[in-house]
Every structure is written in structure tokens, then in C-alpha cells.
Length: 348
Image (cartoon, rainbow, N blue to C red; front, side):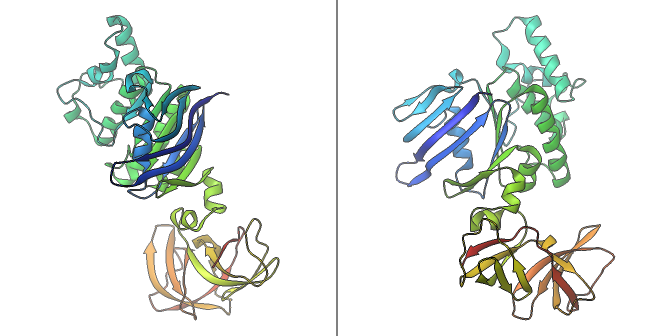
């Protein structure tokens, strides 16, 4: 399998504003879906703009299928890159029909060939009966599908998606993320998504890079990011959880206010270290028989479960997912115990 995208030690900054990206590197194999995940202002969209040729880089190199597209002093124009771009606001032409929007980038094709490609793409995004409609007649999810079909129409070597679901409600966002992934996989399209929403990232991507202040702190599979975060920032940004004070009593033992844990594979801690231990909501179990008690200070009903915020005797707060038939009142003290399969700790 060949490399579709190589971003090698890329630097970028706006004059007078300091660096936006610093030595940023990532690769995508053909057919892989990658994601840059991070808070607003960390440089995610700028990475896409540099890959698309909309911004010149000041250091490093960007290659598309082995060909240099950008390096210092040289930026191949966007139209030569065969890169599709799905924008946050869809950017559909309001005066054109759905079919005309999808076919907009195919004007060099003969009419019959262009019409066949439009029909093929509308069917792929489940919009086969909507070719004669106009954008104002569509729902948000339908407009997103049309924007995707338009970007895919010219057979791009790489598809870039900039916060593509941010204008949709939460339920539609998650469902459409899965649908778009299925479409891209069925077409064998290589894609790079940027988002601040980890649920979108988990639903769509094969690999995710967590960005912070212009650098990728960790690139990994979603499961690994959640269960083996490499830095405090990744641990805090990906998934729900809290860091509590703990102590490494010896090489494979950790003492906490909630009891003793054994084994911390991959943790860079030494005997005698004061550490910060990451606890996810599924690490803290409700147990009426436990002598260890915690006070319910917040509760969020999630249908099958409550997400409880619990205050320990030392003042620390932890989160716990509890089946919703255990409906406890604010201020009530409940029994809890630890059940940690993946111990995640950092030097304090």
C-alpha cells in the first residue's frame, strides 16, 4: 500500500504572529481516513489549507503520492494537486441545482460522461432522487452529502474535510459521521478530517492525531488514544476523566485515596514518585457493600446510565458511570470501588 500523503516536519506561521505549526509530521496510506483532533485555535484547519496549497509553508515538505507539493519557496497551485475540500459551511451554489453543484468541477468532461458521474455520486451519497432540488430545499444532512459528492466528483487523490458536521445537531452529527465513513471506505478514498469533537473523530477515523498549539502530541488508533494517552494533554482532551494525586510505592504499586493499584505498563514513573493518576468514569464502580464512600455532588442522566461526579474524603472529585436504576440524590454518600484495567499515570 502506497503513501497518499506525507507531511514532513512542516513549519508555518503568519507574519508578525509567531508559529502556527512547528515540525508537524503525519502520513496517510491509500484508502486511510485520518483525523486531526484538537481545540479551537490549535492549527488544525491551517494544516488542511497548507495541504490543499492555499497557504505556503516556511519549512519542511508536503508530498502527495510521492510528488512534492509544498516546500519552502515552492507551492504547487491547488488545481494541480487533485485534492478535494469539504468546507465547514458546505459552500454550495444556491442558484444551482443539486446535480449542477455536484457536476460543477466536471465542466471539461463530455456531457454524457459528466451526467453519468453526477448520477453515480448522488447514488453513492443516497441522494439519487434529489438532483433537481436546490440547496435551500435540503436539510443540513442532505447539504453535507451534496458537498461531499461535489468534492468527490473529480476523483481526488485526497479528500480534506474541515469540521464538516459542526453545523448539525448532535444526533445527526454522529449518524452522518458513520455514513460518511462508509461512503469513503466504499469508494476507497483517502481522507483527512479536522474536528474538535472526539465522537466524530472516533466514528470516522482509522488514525487520529491530537493537536495542541501547532504540534501533534500523539497519533494513534482511537482505542489507543483513549486507553494509552502519551501525554497529560491527550489524557485530558480525549474521553472523560479526572487526574488524582497518587504515589508510586514501589515498581509496580500505586497508592491512592481509593486503594492500591498494581502494574502500570508503559508509565514513566519510578518508585517513590508522586504521580497523577487518570481515572475514567468506567474505572470507578458503584458498590453498596464497599466501605469506601463518596458524596454525590453532580449527576447527569444519560438514559441507561447516570454520570455521577463524586467527592472523595480528601476533596478530590471523580466520575462514575452507574446504571440508571441506581438513582441517588445530590449530597448522598454511596459506596464505590476501583476497577482499573488500564492504569494511566504521569509524573506530578
